[in-house]
Length: 114
Image 1 (cartoon, rainbow, N blue to C red):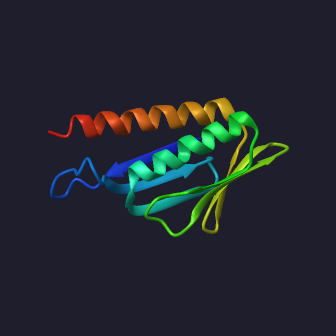
Image 2: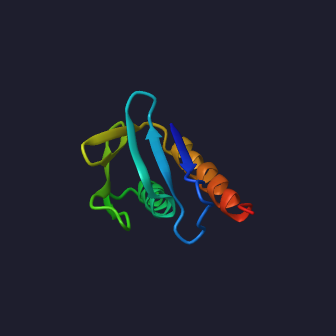
C-alpha cells in the first residue's frame, strides 16, 4: 500500500485550503485525484481506516468533491473505491500505518510552510 501526495506550492501553501495531488495504490491499481483539497482526503482516509478496524462498510463524503470514498469489507480484506477505481487492502494494519505516516507528513509540511 502506498499513499503519495504533493502540495501545490505555486504561489505559496495555503494552510486553510491545502490543494494538491493525491494517489492511493495497492501496488496494482491506483486511485488518483489532482488539484484537490488534501486535508479533506486525509479526513476521509482516516474515517476509512477507523471503519476497517471496526468492521463496517462505509461511504465517506469528501468535502468539495462530487463523489464519495467507499469502503466495502470483503473476505480478503477491504475494497476502497472512488469514481470508477477500486483498490484492495489485504493488510489492514499496514494500510492504517500508511495513512498515519502520510497524514503526519502532510501536517508537518503544513506546519513548516514558512
